[in-house]
Length: 425
Ligand code: SF4
Image 1 (cartoon, rainbow, N blue to C red):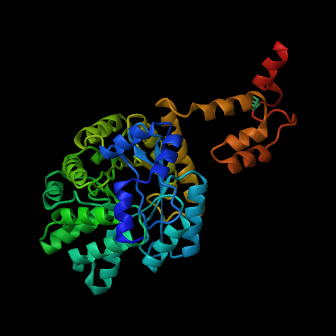
Image 2: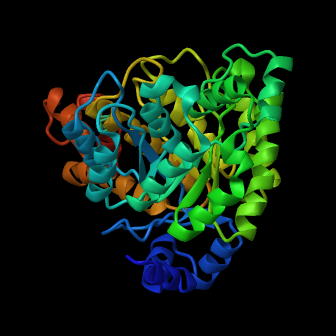
Image 3: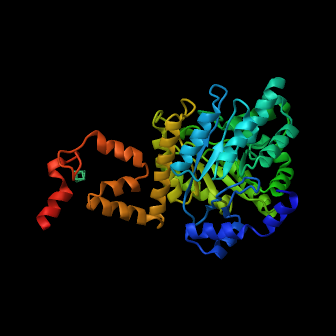
């Protein structure tokens, strides 16, 4: 797509796609356009991403979920990453993020974008740092290296990029005054804190934010304003560095809107249940309704091996209180690079969290009604097809059958529904 096509697309924001999205979301197209223009909804959609099925994220819409995939320096297998992308999309991920830091990062990204019908996000600083590590460590990266990498990601069709613009010299200085249990747990945040400290310079993503906005506008990608100082322990939740960074992000949201660039705001992290509502309300106030993308949140710190559950509990509550976009957490969180199976488990857990919030927010209970009717009718095939993970549901039914084929082996002859059915007959 050339420059002129990109410009014309921005003037008339893909009317066909908008119609399709408003139908799926059950919202009037005019209202969707209004929310998009106000920056309360984002539709990350890079014109260079061919065969993209765009989705809208934000106020009044169905809760969306993201699945992170990508290589690390220890595990580099392009086919496995492509399989993770396929599985994530099959099980209901609305977007995927390629966080690769190992192997030929550009090639992996290009192939993931090509294979993905859903929007793809990245964190360009990972690649920028990997490229410069050979030259002498992360601190040798220049601002130009970082912006060149961002431009490459845009040219490769990446729809949204995490940029940790709120990790500034001032916000990171508050880390020294307000001691934390786990310090900085965001990779991008940590890299920038180290870079600023060693180079005694301001974060280029903050210092040259106008340039970043120009680039985002020219290439039509959305910014996902990263929470580099997010808490990595419930003991650090809602502390001064986290809120300080959020206030900076709120100002950057204003500047993105003035520049006509779509911005999403990322949020924590590890947050106990009783602080989740406040976190959502503060973000929605400080960032004036910008779509809120939460990473979990994990509601306790001891779920290792089961953090897809701690993340889903937090995600459901955050979405119920108004978060728009949940980043999944896999069972391997904090322990290892996820496998394909971990990705499936993480997506399913996050899908359930998002749906639970949609139901409580008054959307999407028709699916549950159908399932309840199928249960009452003992229509097992229908139950499988309506399950969030039909394969898992079938496996459980097959594993321990009841002597009575109609019911399941949980209650067997004492099946409550069957008993009452027969009595009433
Ligand atoms: S046996 Fe028990 S658990 Fe199984 S369908 Fe009947 S009531 Fe439900």
